[in-house]
Image 1: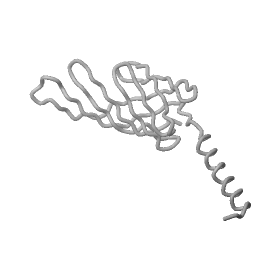
Image 2: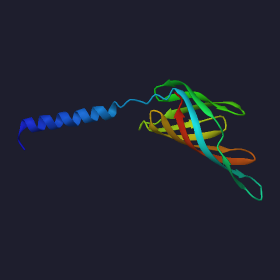
Image 3: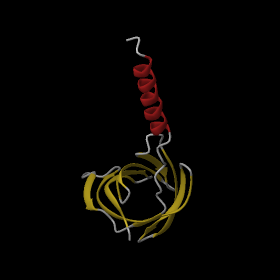
Length: 136
């Protein structure tokens, strides 16, 4: 173990692998994403409090990204809702808010994201889960 060449190579390998992990690029999420989802609603004060519903047709546009911070809008049948979020240090998790809920996302690849969207309103609560696919 007194071989200086062995230690020099080992040190170089460790340094290079550390640098590559530290410099992994933040994924670019700018673009239009099409949602496919399922939805469940819990109605407050109702005798049949839960309702399974099909997910709504929705597009999400990530309009601006500055490093890990993203801004955009969700285009819903009822109108446009602003969204904002942060890409986590693992470059796979994204945490977002909209005007009345939260969205947790997991980046699968550059064109596909899994998500869970939660809303808590005065009369009901809902969870929507599915995928976003980048529109080409």
